[in-house]
Each structure stands twice: as C-alpha cells, then as structure tokens.
Amino acid sequence: MPVSPYIASLRAHVGHDLLLIPAVTAVIRDGDRFLLARHSDSGMWGLIGGSIEPGEHPAGAMAREVREEIGAGIRILGIVGVYGGEELVVEYPNGDRVAYVTTAYSCELTGAPRPDLDEILEVAWFTRDEVAALDLQPYVEQVLRDA
Image 1 (cartoon, helix red, strand yellow):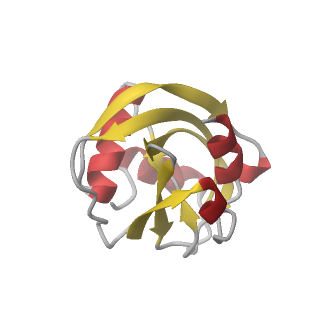
Image 2: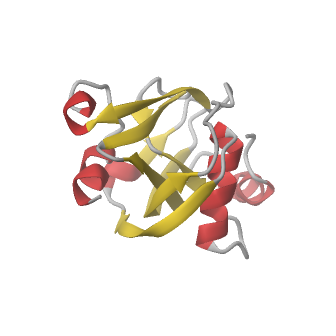
Image 3: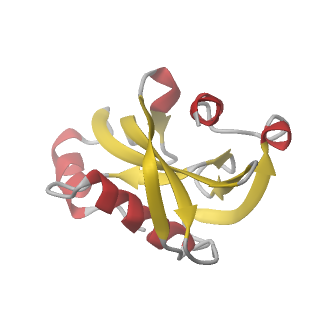
C-alpha cells in the first residue's frame, strides 16, 4: 500500500526526519506455529502490521492491515503487549525515518493468507525453533516470546 495521505502530509513538512507513529502488529498463531511475512522493503521476516490512521480504532487498523497485506480476515483474541524503542526505529529505502510504538494483538486467521506482493513477498508458518534461523526484524523475537 502506498504511503497514507496523513503520513504524506506530515512528510511534506518534515521531509525524511524521524516521525513517531502509532502502529499495530498481528501475532497470528496456529497451535505452535506463527505466521510470518517476508517484507519487500528489507527482505527480512517479520509480523504483519502497520500504522494507525487518524480516527481509526487500533483493532480496526489491525484488521485492515492484515486484509491489505495478506488478503485474509482475522479474529482478535487479545493484546500481547505494547512495544517501542530502538528495535522499532526504521529507515526506509527512500530515507524516511519512523519510530513505531506498536500494540501487538494475538490473532487467528479467518481466511487463507495470500501476500500482496507489494509490501509482503511471501508468508509462511514457523515454529519457535524455526524462527531462530530466520533473518528477522529486530522486534519480532521479543513479541513472540511474550505471545
């Protein structure tokens, strides 16, 4: 998905400077396996999620992000935790810098995942042991430990 109109309007004023952005993250589980996604901007494996738009309820943003990125619905089961810090500071290929503060939700899929091939290149199920061998986005291990 392209940059939201809200973020684009902020970028018109601040350029590539660091923005603090509220976000949501889906911890999608099936038994002992977690659904991870390989992200196109970094090539790394991570969780599905994204920023919350102004006026949007976080749970609604979670459902929207999952639908946009993997074309599936979810059932939200609860909150895993809230995360921020250096692990969630991202510099995108265009130079934009973002510090996310994300609420991670425990979720179940209600449909088959299909990566959008724009933001998400592929999705796959992994056990905790298998996750250890992946090239992961820095915050993922902490979120999965808490899940």
